[in-house]
Picture 1 (cartoon, rainbow, N blue to C red):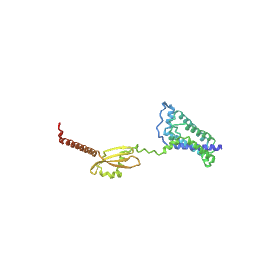
Picture 2 (cartoon, helix red, strand yellow):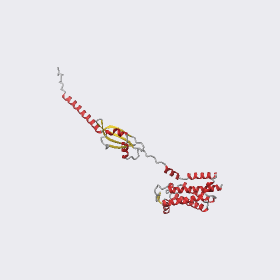
Picture 3 (cartoon, helix red, strand yellow):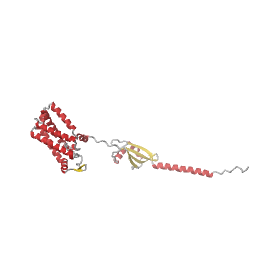
Picture 4 (cartoon, rainbow, N blue to C red):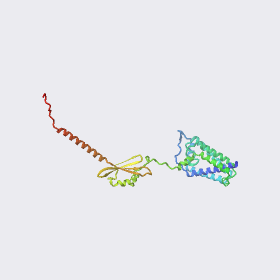
Length: 306
């Protein structure tokens, strides 16, 4: 039972080191460097240099290569020097994570490269401590990782699965990894940036434009405005010897290429109608006044005292 536990720790540590190596070599930082102040308090110079060193790409690559070599060494040899180097490495990592947790929680631990950019919390410290304990336990393991893999016992497989599950539960990097591979959310059509060339391209390719193209008098629109998920473009036109405005509604959605149209009376036509109604009313009023003036005055036929 004790031997199975020791051999399991060798496999676990080798897997963690190789994963950390892969993450450091392939994942790049997406966020800016950590600030020089935390809650208004200046960061000590030593910790500031430590954070800057951790964020250095060259330092990250160097650490990744070292972790990868150490993980491969755990797999191919059972030499005590490799186990001691692994224990010292995880103990140093635990100390660094603990210092960052107290003094620079905003800087991230960098345990798995850019995936560990979020602030250091208790889970990160507890995970580092557990890995250090696993490294201490692995000092007495009789076999190398490859030898354990060649003859995996049920106990070793079960314990390895449980420890990996615990490791994943204590890893905030999973959320960051999922966020990197998550598809970006589509921008709502009413807030999506829709340039005018895109609107004109959709308009000219639509059947609505083809139906009214011959009635449009000018290629320069009278007015252009946007409301919600639609951009409206109004053109001057002439239909049945009347001046009209042909208004096109072009969708601003990324996928929806709908274009609608409507023909409305132009402002010129409307003003002419209003003017004609005013003239007509004035003519009618003048005719009424003229008829009242031309009417003869009726004499008073009532005799006085007769």
